[in-house]
Length: 320
Length: 293
Image 1: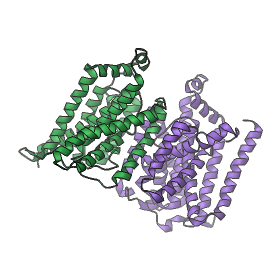
Image 2: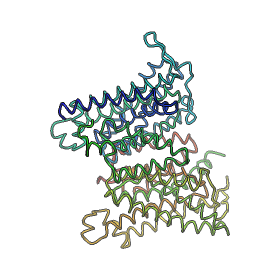
Image 3: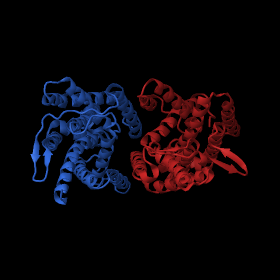
Image 4: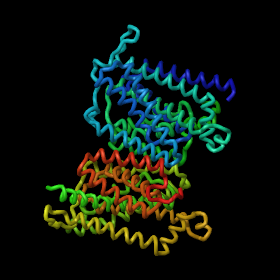
């Protein structure tokens, strides 16, 4: 990518963040809240995309990293009454540690085995949230007390029950994630990730330690997913086993595939489209997941590059 | 009840579980063995079998046994037809790319499950057993139907073994499994074999579900558990190895049944799932499989 293309890409990313910032003054209340959720979920999918889109490793267990952040942050606030920033940091750390441990074991496999192994580990994590029901309350879940949802940053009181605050925190998290992924992808590691996706044995032959690079990708991916989970529980004050189900792993895959795997903004676009499609469908029928299934099949049959992937291929070569 | 009889009861429950699991997992194992693809929608074919069985028995209202016999004939055929169509319309077009197939079958899982929710509804529904009799042991009475399920499963497995090992159909299947390209060169319609194997794999799941539905109820979410258990069994037994699959199904079915009686079922599931993930990482050929993958 040339220097001029890179400038265009950075300008586009800044423009997207600026549009999202302005959007909060225009959106009605309901869509304001939806957009907050979408931005947090997009961070999850973007984290997923680091592993799937850039490194070419398809995980079916990312719900466990999302849930690691969610539970680590939620339980420390609920049981230990930790402050919000500390709980968020704990959630992120939980994601980093769990993805490191899972990665060391699961990355010994590739392809279909990797998918099944990650799915199995995630299933164990889900069952654990049910088993330790004394702390987690299982399916029923926990609601964080309102008093625990405000904190001071350098003397400024931040109240997470305020929708405007929530929107801007979600936006800040999204912007930070975009910056981190942009930086990673354009670093030497990022190029090695793409090289592994395209041809792992050849990358190995060039002298790269592909295991270490894949582990790095998985840790970045898992940590970002956990950050999304931690933000989700702190912003919306609810933690429950549903978030650890395979459904959430598949959602991340669905958002990424739909928006375009291996594009920076694809997961955001996918999350936005899928969220609203499901939201509208669920007004008409209980079987709204039918649409998720149909979209998956259509994507994999006819549209493997997703929306932004196709746009990049056909029209805008410099799309990040 | 004393410990001895209690263990005996738990073993009987485990046997029923193992019988059904054998059939379901064998279907998944056949599909993986011959086509080298993982069918994530397998559990939904099981669910469809149960739901169609309920539907058939509720229409054929003469006598529970007649309804059940009709269900046992119709449900697997209907499920096989649906699987056949799915294979032709989706998997074939993906050229059986392993990863794309998994994503596509996840899609099929949602489509089938949500269709069942739309047309069958969210409530579990019972199916009457074809007959009632109790076998009286010295310590407790036990449902005769459950033992018939075990016997039926064994009979079906024997037939399956005979077809695969002794007939021309089985030979064609084994040839395709061994080397698809060479089989094609020798005039075996590999494409049609794939579609048939996919349908037959689904039918195994459907038969298992029809057998078990009088004991458990039909419900649109009932497919997930057999799917995960079948995965566990097929991986432990060695992907694609039919003998390994059956041994592992008996092992997992029995231990799951027994452990669930004495300990928390959630803990039992956690332990077996974790074990399987580790087997897949450190011994990908399975516990009983030979080194071939």
